[in-house]
Length: 471
Image (tube, rainbow, N blue to C red; front, side, top):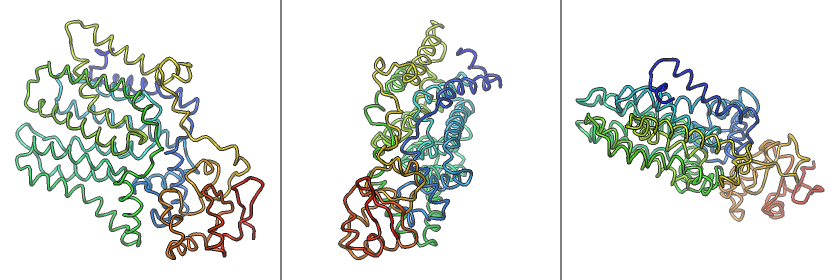
């Protein structure tokens, strides 16, 4: 199989795409439960489609470009989950093929072909976490696109004009998922090892990075929401106070990372025993080591629980695995290793379908998907507000107020003794108060006292904690 994919013929690309579909389509066909990050994305897109302005009319920390994409997808159809899954599949395929193209074009390894893309897509299919359209997956695609601009066009020097484009793409990626801004460290290292004038080149890279943020800042400035952009996106993300439960638990993710981690360690060990002919190839190896360190740092910023964390390790894993798949004295050994990897990927990915969860000791991702709360089954298609962190009631209902993220909503609900907070509450509820209110935090009595003109109209239903608007 390795010899087949070491060829650059177009038929190998066709076989690679067939393998990708064979690994992923069966589970997609059976149906993957909605994840918390997808539910949040659907709610954000729904609110933006209704005309809300991000951060000013929606208290959420989702990055601007990711939110804009979610809003655009909602124009296609109401809560298009199928479109999210297709887009996630296309983004992962794009990353694999683009990274493989860079490896071949730059001659970073003596052997060419589609082995790099094969490894990228194979390990990327290890978990259904990467079947989910997430801001991290979206932003990472721009980092892959920026890699070619970070490499010199010739072995003798750097084309500085390309550095602005590299910085620009990193900035766009950060506008999709803010911690990806740490990728500037990879750009800095690339400038140091490849550029003749490192300081000037790095300034050009930084200018390119800041340009997308200058555009975003100008937009929020003219829409009078620049303070909200800083308060609800920049500050919470930098302080690590958002989306702490959107992804898989850390202990589950660490078990899923056992195979990728072993491949990375084996590949690094094999690379140290392999003679690299060109100085450029040595520098690229060092660049991938720095990429690996930065990827771990980005994962740490997301506390290892951001949806799609595995994708951060795929580029360095793909590169170092090339040393495992190269020619060896025992030709059958790399082939056997590849078959073993394929077998592990299939078993881990389909462990729930094959009832192998107890054997592999990794619970299915579906256990951490959004499950409807039976208590609120009578609420369907209603406009409501949940006073609490539980977003499950929104699964079959619509968000009626700006208060999507309960942690960020504390800027109002956590300061009910302050006039500004009470005034904002009255303003946000005055135009279109929700038809139902689910009080999980026990705030309604105080709200009825502080803002009686709105909250005094909510009467209890037969379900404790659920109130209906009566007018």
